[in-house]
Image: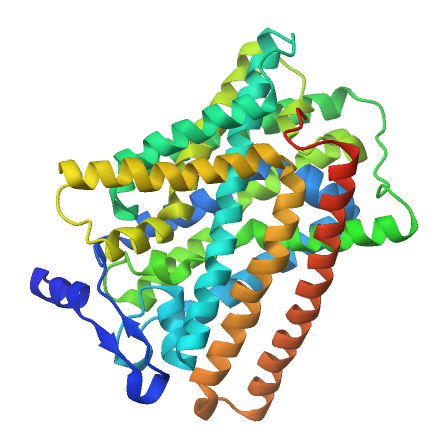
Length: 443
């Protein structure tokens, strides 16, 4: 796309007052239409192979077992690709690009849906960011314990350090497209902790006696645990910010985005499967929530895995915080050079303050598995599955036959029930953990 067209696309303001309920969509202070589909594919793959993969053996496989875990992960992959494709195909609805999730919802439904979608997305991304800070803190503590297990450096302190580093990175990287070479570093970091966790898990599994693969718990407790794990399944594969990522891609927008999605859900998911299945195979139902706490091996190797998990969490958090940064930068007119004194001071105060609050919540309730379950239940299910199917149904209703309409309605109803059940389960899990441990717990 030429420079003139890109500027027109960037600065245009759409007003849907007559037909769509007074929804005004502002321009953006960030770049759009600049990235190749391959760079976008790496952004998506970075998201699903972030350090969260080190939690899936314990938070997905342990509660679901071999049959439920394997089938669940494969089904979640297929359903997530389908739901993300629905959103991708709506990106140019009405002959214009919708560069934010809420813009698309506002165009289809009106102002109330615009606001509701923004609330859901904010909750989703805030909780994902909180999870990354918990992960960063857990990786730091695991590294410290390898060398000095004296209990002086507690998890809340590690979370505070992790949050500070995340804030420094956010201040230095102005927008999503500016990640550039950092995506390469992210890939290297991901490969490091994935390969190390796989090799050490494989070694432990080959040397260990038969493991117990029974789903833990009994009665009602087991049912709630299984339901909560279903929310972890959808959490694993979905960004909750697909239009914002798609906004950075070059024309043809839909075609290039589908290339990126196919890469994400084929090549991109293989490392996740590798860690989830091997980790569970090696340790069974005793697998830790953070896999690197289960593995045995040379101290320097485990330390390398933890450090790369920490660094990758910092980069991945920036991806999921970028819609909030874009909103704030656009609202307050933060454009131009990233080193401009006004722009730099704005990022220090605003992004630093935002991540400080994230860090406080992470240290206050550092229950990683519970956060993954709650995020999937209250925001990923509604945002990525319910809303995606309903928007597609409403936008394309004149082009869909009766069976296709019935299919989308079924998806809406099914995922609504799953969202409600998973929310109840996640709240129960957090309540139980809050009684077992305490706030600012040193897990």
